[in-house]
Every structure is written in structure tokens, then in C-alpha cells.
Length: 206
Image 1 (spheres, rainbow, N blue to C red):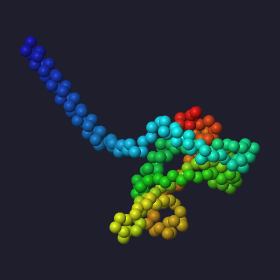
Image 2 (cartoon, one colour):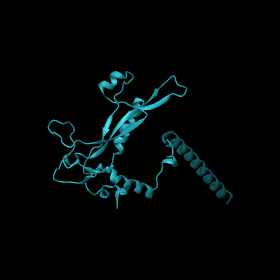
Image 3 (cartoon, rainbow, N blue to C red):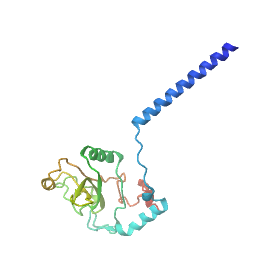
Image 4 (cartoon, rainbow, N blue to C red):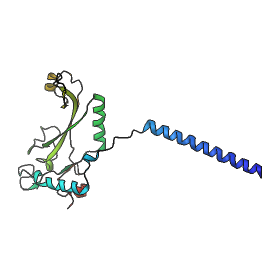
């Protein structure tokens, strides 16, 4: 009987030691491979009812697309209310920013032309998006102005491939980017189509 108890004690001890070792290894792996992101501050969090209300407030500001844009026979087409970007596209931008010392992205609100010459225009959007609003994302870098001031001002300077800008700012040695949405029927821009909730835009649901 004493021998049995001894064997059980040894077995339990070995299991505990193995478990402890595994836990330490797991903790080490987690510590070296997982980076805990900074939490989003409460000051910028928006609850669902408020978000839905704000989205609704924008409807009148979004307005309508010019009748001459794309389809002259269709009047009063509601303008774009939301734009979606893929995770891959966002990761590419972050990778570029980190490799070039960028500090963020500036979002420009833009509108496609009402008319395009498809044979002469590079990257012409599909006709159904002519005249609609969308976004441009531009890489930025921290820049210091008024260096002699007690508290120097800083700004987030756009930087991208542009001969004029590069000539004026010799410090610009990297290309940066100007990235637009890729409108398609999968819901990158909405409208179009006329109904956005089926594309996944839940805050536009009635």
C-alpha cells in the first residue's frame, strides 16, 4: 500500500511540474509574440443609439448626386453615406507608414467627376459611381514648425509621390501614398446601391 501511495505522489508531482513548465512556456510565447494594443479611450467611444443618430444627421448633408453624373435620366440619387476599406488595404498602409516613419493617415472627402472619358482616363471608376462622394487616404509625417518657439507647433504633413512637393521639401525621400476606395458591388461605397444595410452597413438601417 505504501508503495502505491509513493507512486501516486510521484505521478502527481510530475504532472504538476509539467503543467507549470508548460504555463511558463505559454507565458513566454505570449509575452514575445503578442503585443497588447493600447485601449481605445472612453472619450472617443460612441454607443449604438448615438452612432445611429449621428449617421442619420448626416443624411441631409450628404445630399444628392448631380443629375448629369453618369445617368442623366435618373434624378435625386442619394449621395454616398459610407465607405468600407478591407483589412488588407489598411495593413498595407500601416506597413508603409512604419517603414517610412509616417505618423498617420489624413482622410480627404472627395467627389468623383460627373463625366469621364473611359479610353483616356486612368483608373476610371465604374459609371454607376460617377458624381458620388468617397474618401482619399493620404500618408502623413510629424513636422515641426516654429522651431524657435518655447513650445514648437507640430503638424501632420501630407507626404506622397509628387515632384512639386518633393522639390520644395528636400526631406521627403519616401513615396508615401494617396489611396482611394475601390468602388464595387460588394459595398465599398454605398450608395450605390440604393439600399445599404444588405451590404453590411447596419447604422443605415431604418
